[in-house]
Amino acid sequence: MRVEVQQSEKLYVLGELAAAIAHEMRNPMTVVRGFLQLLQEQSVSPEKQKMFLELSIEELDRSEAIISDYLAYAKPQIDKHEGIEVSERVRSVAGVVTSYATLRSVTVESQIEDGLELTGDPEKFSQVLMNLFKNGIEAMPQGGTLHIHAYKRARQIHIDVSDTGVGMTPAELARLGNPYYSTKETGTGLGLMVTYQIVHSMSGHIQVKSEKGKGTQFALSFPLPDKHHEKNAPPK
Ligand code: ADP
Ligand code: MG
Image 1 (spheres, protein in one colour):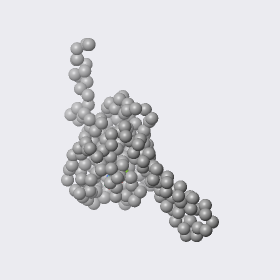
Image 2 (cartoon, rainbow, N blue to C red):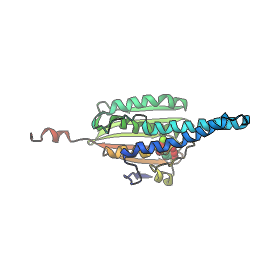
Image 3 (cartoon, helix red, strand yellow):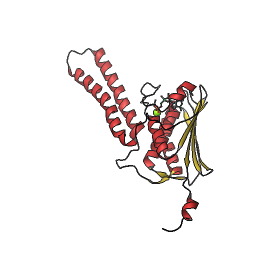
Image 4 (cartoon, rainbow, N blue to C red):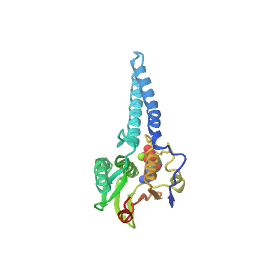
């Protein structure tokens, strides 16, 4: 089962992200504040205290997840348009998730061509990688292998991220990228929405192949600027 992910009206434009994050963070903060206030009261039973603390921790984890899906790499500037050293970025984000993978008995195997470059916002590009790598790892609760393959072919840069995890049914696959769609207990359902948006803003494409119980592959492709054409352009 393959789907080509289209740019969707459901997606927020990047500029509206800040408002969306503020909205998302307010809920957990309100909830935690409420529990802390209840804990201040003398009459709360030890069982209730325990429950309030557990729920507060859950809410704080949720806020942490929102930050990491949306903002792990965000910088407070407007969108940058500069050289992205793709090979270095892929290597470095793969390095960052390795301890997360090891904790879950997941092996990270990467094959990364040297010298790959694109144009765009390097931090946003790292956010894309982070969200895809994390999802891959989280799809393997029993352990497995996360494969990362980055290469150039036919004037395009390809980044394939595949896992040997739980996979998805065609119906689940069709819901990917919808805001708040998550099958995880403390999931945000925002990671892929952000990912698709950034990839499309870079004129890239995402193709997802998945088989329930077998695993999933996210295949990203980005067109390379026509360097030859630029060089031979007449002087202005
Ligand atoms: P979250 O990770 O917070 O749930 P995402 O937007 O990153 O939100 O992902 C949305 C949903 O898509 C996940 O909850 C999961 O059901 C599904 N998904 C994403 N990546 C994978 C994957 N590699 N394998 C299986 N399911 C996936
Ligand atoms: Mg995610």
